[in-house]
Image (cartoon, rainbow, N blue to C red):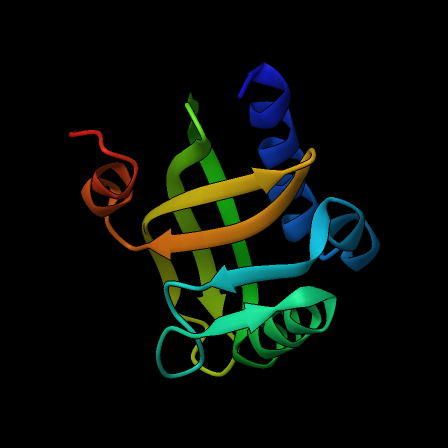
Length: 132
């Protein structure tokens, strides 16, 4: 793993925030699994480009604004961990939301093949064998 993988993850976060489905597909494997920290009701696992599209559609249905702020992206051997936060505003309520987000990215051949999301930085760090 390398700085290159950190750059890939940062680019994927930017593509997510732009809702750039083409870039998300280019940067991920066809069998990518994305385990979200929160869905419309509870966390879900989305698979492949169709899954990413479905997830983004659901976000658009529930949120006026929803983006990831990557504050700390680290190479950790076979994985990359991103610590940051979610910033959003509910579509119906207009309520502002801000919460921690930790994501663990697995990469294969320079592409993201799995994303595991956590609403607690400590849990994300623990998932890659680190402590806060």
